[in-house]
Amino acid sequence: MPFLLRVELPDVPGSLGRVASAIGMAGGDIEAIEIVEKRHDDEIAVDDVLLEVSPGTMPDSIVSACNALDGVQVVWISRYAAGGNLFLDLEAVEELTADPAGSLDRLIDLLPVTFRAEWAARVSDSAGVVHATDAAPTDLTFTSIGKAARLDTPDDNVHCGARLNKHEIVVIGRRGGPEFLDSEVARLGHLVSLAMSISRAG
Image (cartoon, rainbow, N blue to C red; front, side):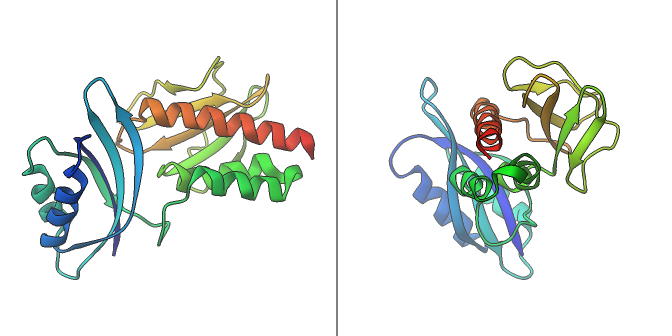
């Protein structure tokens, strides 16, 4: 069964190898790794690790094995329904350019996989939700956003949004976390801007 693990580790040579060894010893098989963020001031890296867990292996044992390493902290682990590989930003852009006329809706379809979020939606200031993935809340409301930002929520869900144009925003969400990192917020803003430019070109 595929799982996605987000882990903080020292940004020094050998750290990732130690984490990989711990995951392997605990019954996990790494399929892919993506660097999500590097915090140069703290010398910390944040990585997303896609792994396959052996039958009978509990995800908690992998978390414990990683957390036992000096300077390593698992932020979050969950089942990864998207399947066999991490969907990178450039792959999303390639899909958008293949159909400029439908790029804004396609962006919403791709964002949950690209950001390991549970849902995404386009929200209009006049019509409410105009396009969304299946798991998106139906009661989302338009919020005026300057640049991409984390959005306040009344519960333990986490939302991040970016302005698409004067009348629409894009929102992505995770139930229960983890919080969207600064690098993810910036990526969302960049992808939304690219999608808007692609749609105009079509």
